[in-house]
Length: 194
Ligand code: URA
Image (spheres, rainbow, N blue to C red):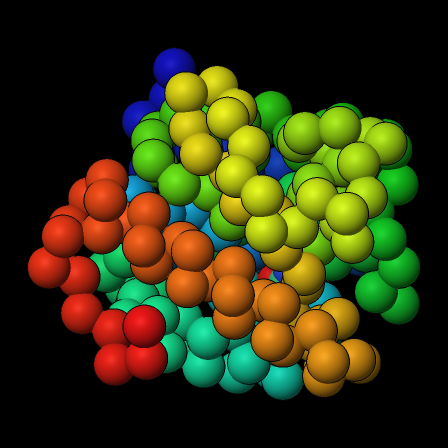
């Protein structure tokens, strides 16, 4: 298996699917490569494609608020990545060919980061990794045992921007993650809000 840096260099020049032709930047993923928590979302949007960094713009701001309230920082506690590493034009959902081409990179990232906890942000990540028939509305908030890791599916921050009533369930899910993090990783983990 690649080491983290070798994998990153490979992904940054990837041309395995047509998204490579329209991207400005590959969005490999950001955070601590040794984190115990990994967040997985769908794919880069406009601001991520411009900057090469995951979760910029309004959904990034909202995600940062949730992480800060949980006592997690992007640099220390988490690594964030996406199902596809290049922006689908017009922010459409990635198609099956694009997801299939990119997924081996995500699997390698998961092995290399080796997190105890994985948070799936939204339906695309849930369906791609766990079960194509799973429904985020039904399954969010429930721990799933997956390849010796604990997975918590929750709503994507963009869904919260569209529908603020989803903020409360997402906060419940993150409180659950904080409790699990204290149990598995650091009993002293500090969060001002839970
Ligand atoms: N939405 C995603 O799914 N991923 C990002 O990196 C940013 C927005």
